[in-house]
Image (cartoon, rainbow, N blue to C red; front, side):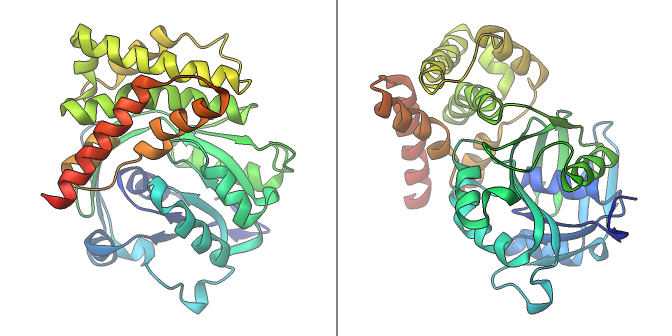
Length: 325
């Protein structure tokens, strides 16, 4: 059992899409007290029927609705200042809303961690919650939501976390130790990283290489490896973004883009990436926090990023056509 001061850890998962559902399902195996912030039909199913969870072995597990409390919109008074950990899993365009929800729900000494794709999320949380309560994070787990209240774990990865600059949240902090322990008990493979910027940029480089092209072409990840022209485009977008990372002072000396891209594409060949899932479902994507951030930061350093600009424009065009079509 994972406890703080003898009490069971209370965890809020804010944004319950594919990754949020994966984390909810795995944490449901522990003694953690779970709160799920989601909306619409998915929230209704989770609150009434629970979650159907297909694990890595292909077995289907059912987690009943009474395993958690599901809510959306205005926070009920009993849930004010009650949470020990807030895990932000929602899409990038919801970060501001979810930060406000976290602020109302978190205890004064609680931890918030964003595991969203892209850059800038931790800084937004700090602006709302304070640097002393925020960890940087990302995940390499793969998940696919097949329908409301249904998720498939498509690839084992890790949940990585790191301290922000001048933060008191370090590995020896009891709050961090409790978080690592509960994630380990849940089989989510927590890993501590010692450079937040390096951690987030490594993930972003892979995201800008894979997600936009897979979404635009409507293909699974393995096709980016199988088709030479797609692989070349993916690697070029990645290398372009790496120039921006280097300009920001990120050490990429131990990160070989070609090797890492091929490794991830091979490991996730059968996956539909999150951006492709969003496009197929007519949802807003995270392109602005991926290629959009590369373009924006490239402009600050005077670095041309035409490939990322093109991917940004094309995905935005798909989003627009979905809304108006």
